Every structure is written in structure tokens, then in C-alpha cells.
Amino acid sequence: MARQSASRAAQNLRNLAQRHGTPLFLIRRSVVREQLNRFRKALRRVEPFYAIKANPHPGILKTLVAAGAGFDVASKAEMEAALSAGAAPERIIFANTIKPAEAIATAAREGVLLTTFDSEYELYKIAEHSPKSRVLVRIKVPNIGSVVELSLKFGVDPSDAVPLLIKARRLGLTPAGVSFHVGSQCTHMENYVESLEMAAIIVRDAKLKQFPLEIVDIGGGFPIPHLDGDEDQFDKTARVIAREIERLFDRNLRIIAEPGRFISGPSATLVMRVIGKAIRENKHWYYLDDGVYGDLSGIMFDHAKYQFNVLRSGRRQLSTLAGPTCDSLDIIARGEDLPELEIGDIVYVNNVGAYSSASATTFNGIAPAKIVVVQ
Ligand SMILES: Cc1ncc(COP(=O)(O)O)c(C=O)c1O
Picture 1 (cartoon, rainbow, N blue to C red):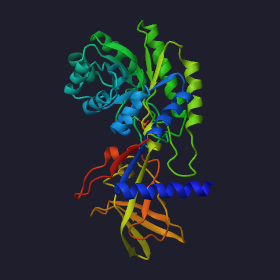
Picture 2 (cartoon, rainbow, N blue to C red):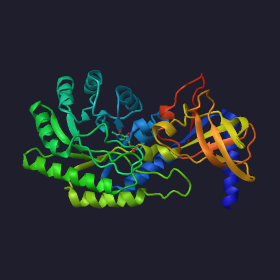
Picture 3 (cartoon, protein in one colour):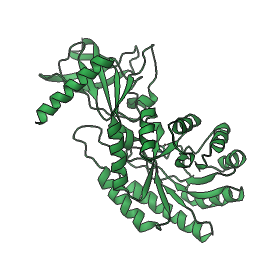
Picture 4 (cartoon, protein in one colour):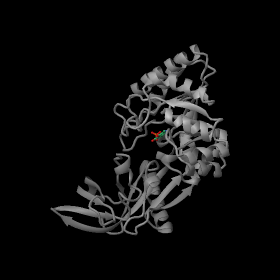
């Protein structure tokens, strides 16, 4: 049975590659919806605001608008993408702590009033260009073991959070809450536990100082399995987060999150073909029609390790995969255990939906993959 469905899936990939050509970036809306539902079910008190940076494709955004999700935008362009996909301004958080004045002014015009900050200088800018803003202070939290560290560049020391929120109030802004990010692909759930604890202290302190906060934003970081056999840690992590939220926060406090990878990561498959082949130092090298400059840019920017699948069987040997550009940086994987491939063979990667096409570029005149959205 399993073999039958595997061969049906293989045939399906061959047909799609035939119809659309390669490289092909295939997004499944049904998986986007499934991931959102899974998130909501595991974290009932938490409102998901999808972090568009993970994958801004309009097909994903529209699917999420229809499902009632909110959005985390990092720039004016992402804000415009969310709005044109149909998102309501009050369902958007501008969650880049450092924003150009012009982007802040656009947010004010569009009615996107919820935003994060982590510096006094930013507060002056927000007060000038969007005085009705409701601001969340982002704190620096442990990012131990996360694949992508997100507290190096951002976040204030937790002890500075309340003084900064008081400053925000003095400037006429509404101090709305506290936010953090434990690092992307976080598999060390203590990061969430400690961060929630820090946020709770700030919420308590703000209440004592007579400005009760309304929101705690727990950021992103929710992990997905990248390779077959990786442990799926989301449910375990979510159970701990849900328990801590119940323990630490009043029912009337709103908890939001900014999941990116968890929503779009599992939704896409990248289908490539072997365009060239060589033997170098006794090893097979296969050159593919997409690579590190294209939809596998996550190797550079996301520290991603992908699983490369093929449709051919046979005796396996350690091989190297490289991308199509002239740069030696464009080596995708060394020591891949693969059967001997022929020119024209398909190589595909699952779970490649996040931080991939979002940072793909055209180099050497070689464009990233065609994106096709299916149900
Ligand atoms: C502010 C912010 N929110 C949310 C995210 C999404 O994180 P993830 O994809 O790990 O869920 C990121 C990722 O860089 C981020 O910087």
C-alpha cells in the first residue's frame, strides 16, 4: 500500500515537472491550512500572526486570510502584500523593531497600529510618524540551540522593558505589551519557558505601575522536521508553552505569536533536474537546475540542511550536488548517499517552503524556480 502511494507520488512529481518544467516550487494550500489548524489546536489561547518573511507568496497569504489568521510584517512591502491579500489592518503587527520613518508613516495611514520596538530612538520616530501606535517592547531572551539566533541584533534587557514602556506612554503612545523571539527552529523548549517567565514579570510590574498591558507576543521559532526521521517536536513544545501560559497569565491577557516556518515550511516541495554530471576525485558530481543562489538559499541564510530525494533506485554512493551558477559557493551538498543519476533525472526536496523562495535571487541570469500553487 505504502509502496503504491509512493509510486503514485513519484508519478505525480514527474507529471508536474513535465507540465511546468523545472526547477519547480510547488506550494500546497491544504498543507498551509493544516499547519494553521494544528497550531491553533495545540495552542488554543494563542492567536497566530503568520510571519510573512518565511514565504510571502500571495497564494499562502490569501489562504491564511481566508482562514482568519493575522500577519507579522517586517517592511512596508510586506504590509502592502498582506493588505492586498485582504488582511484587515488590525490583524497585522509591524514586528520589525527598527523601521524607516516612511514605513511607519505608511503603517499609520493604513491603520496598522500595532508595532514592536527595542530602542528609545525608535519610540521618538513612532511618536512622530504614527502617534496612535500601540507598542510592544521586544526583550532579549535565550536563543540556546535554535538554528537561527534572533536575539543578537534585537531586544532590550528585560530590566529596561518597563522604563521604556513608561517612556512610550509619556510620548503619547499606548504601551500595549511585550514581545520576544526564541530563535528560529527552536528545539530547546526551555527558551520559551524562560522567556514567558520574563514576560510575566514585566506584565506584573506594568500592572503595579498602573499601566496594565494587553498583549504578550511569543514570536516564532516553532520547529518542523526538516529531514525524514527528525523528531517532530512541535506538539511537545506547544504543550509546555500552553501550560506555562495558563500558569503565568490572566485570562484577559491576549497572547499572540508570529509563526513563519511552522506554517509555510511543510507546504512546499522543490523539484529540480540533473542538468550535468562529472566525476571529480572519484566521486560523482551532479549539477542541478536550482541551487544556493536560488530556492536553496536557505543553506546560506537559514543554516538549512535539506533531504535530497530521487526517483531512481540502485546501489548508493557518496555524491556531491551542486547548483547551476559559476560560483564555487553554489555547492548544495557533499557526501549525499545517492544511486547513480542520469542527466534529466529528478531530484526533489520536501518541507522547503520557508526561508527559501523568499530569499532566492537571479544570478548568472539563472532565475529561481517557477512557483505553482495547488490545492
Ligand atoms: C520578528 C520575527 N517574528 C517571527 C519570525 C518567524 O520565525 P519562525 O519562522 O521561526 O517562526 C521571525 C524570523 O526571523 C522574526 O524575526
